[in-house]
Length: 362
Image 1 (tube, one colour):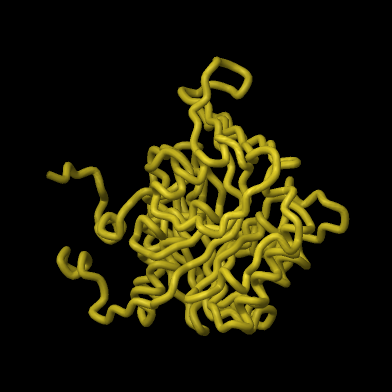
Image 2: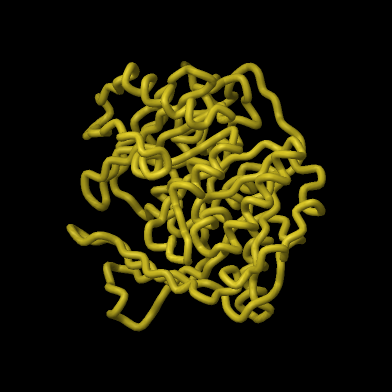
């Protein structure tokens, strides 16, 4: 395939109209750098992050019309977060204001044989004190074509779970397409009565597109995952095994038309092998295998994958292989971007789909 053909994309291009809504918690990210531990040094780099915000920002960078719904405190930190979201192209007109503090997470990057570490500080945050009924989804879902949410929001509090399911049912009844990222975080499911598998399955049953890595699909479905053992780009996928696996998943979630498994084999903390497997209306597609070394920042890679696929499927609806290739390329590029968000363009993602990279673009 020639370079011009790759840059132009498939011959058939369609753009779905209507805005995209995402819902979740925006947090302040405080990161160490240069190999420092959380308890050493005196400085943190500050930025904003959160899975659903990351998806929204990536989509906005790709030219989509996106609104982000959350709850922030009425103080300078909350206002700063909204300023940053607006700066990155998001509509935040329905953000709820209230609560005392913005949730925070602390990030210690990996170094050598030492793993990266995330410490959450989100108890009693503005979002975690959101009450069921605070958000008027009927008003928000005007001229909207897609709603995206994730298991992280469902894991924070019972009110957040109830609010998410209200949004999902309202969107479903209104004919709005639903997408979800399983996004299982074991440390978050702590509130009384929390049941991760049941709640995730309730969410997934309404979704037309579901994304997750091997472990997340296992938690949600109980089906044993297919091992991904690639150490380079020569790896061969067992297509028959994936067909049997996805056929079982489809019986569990019959409304779902698209299911994507994100694979990441961590050869070291700075050397990852990434690839994706897509089930689309009964057919199996596999992506190119990306050998990524060195890793700059692995946070938000899954969010980049989700955003890439949502964008591609709205733009090239009839070409499932191209959508998978685009989303996997987007996630590979995120490993090269510091911070939570994938600040790349559609053109850069398309160019990376066949390129080895490393050129000087002049």
